[in-house]
Amino acid sequence: MSLLTHLLACLFGTGSWVSINGLWVELPLLVPQVPEGWFLPSYLSVLIQAANVGPVFVTMMHRFRPGVLNETVVIYLIMVLGTGASFLLGFFWKETVLVRGVPHSVALLVLTFFLAVVDCTSSVTFLPFMMRLPPQYLTTYFIGEGLSGLLPALVALVQGVGVVHCISGPQLQNQTFNTSNGSAALELQAQYQPASFSPDVFFFFLSAMMLVSLLAFLLLKRRPSSARQNPEARYTNGVKENDLDRRRRAEQRSMMDPYRSQNHKRKSSFGTGAYSWKQVFYIFVVLGWVNALSNTVLPSVQSYSCLPYGNKAYHLSAVLAAVSNPLACCVAMFLPIRSLVFLGAVTVGGSAAGAFIMAMAVLSPCPLLVQEASGSAVIVSSFRLNVSSSRTE
Image 1 (cartoon, rainbow, N blue to C red):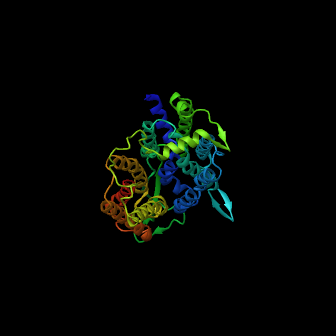
Image 2 (tube, one colour):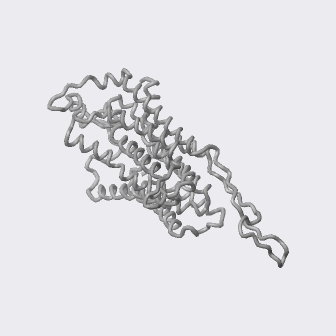
Image 3 (tube, helix red, strand yellow):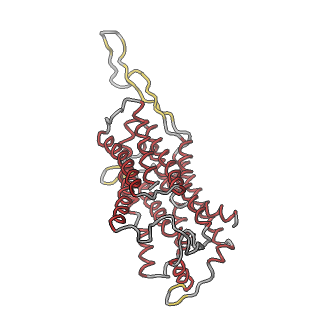
């Protein structure tokens, strides 16, 4: 095994979801500064789901026109697109355009859609490329994929969020004089302390990460280990012969451990027919429910559930949830859930946290414990619990 190849595989994996993960942890700084305001997470959730046209297109091409779509070229294109879109966000995320007389952050929304297409499409292009390498590099790739959420979250944690201080001062307009006590009428004024660095710098950081991932892919493509696994292909009826052979071999062995003996004792009965159709249906219902909550429903209302507790609570809920994601995946890798009962218990726990988050969003702008210090801790912990439970399943 080559240490350099492991490093390149890890850096390549960081480019998978770094753009969207980074955008989510930056929302606490973006929401107060764009005309969409609290609606911004909802807009982004819709755009990200619409961006699944990318992987659908790739899948349909492989199904109906096998051998026509060159996955290496697709990876080049989406990584260049991701690097460029992240870089342009640093300049244009604050720009607005009037749409039917109402200002909208058109540049932010359009570039976010492009980033979402990049990240969604990476799920069906990066992994097939990594399957060309020896299986030990696949684990390293998944580590890099986890870092695609962890690194932006740590940078956002260092960045912080603007702090608001309320100070008393005389009214600037319509100043009145209180004759009963002889003092000037006073009002509270907000004094904003900016974050450690602006969203512009953060978007440039995301662009740099995408560029590093692109360079890692270019070098990985030229590594001897990759060249041995990817010889020059011959075409038969428009389909690469070596691709067909590889697919046949892949169907005959485990994806994660292709050199495992056929007599190796399985640790799980999944895929052996030991599960009934009812159990399989139950598993897929749980997966659909958990993904709907963690990827669409709760992120779209995060501003409503968190902002009443303050910008700091919103910032911590976004950042710590992003940190919990790869950590929970790491735990699940070494301690996988094999009991359907335990799977249901974890799902109920995560759903309970999600129900509390939704309830606070419905009660916004006056949710429970809004004036209490414990309110921020509860809402942040709820997001962490929901994300952790969804990733350990």
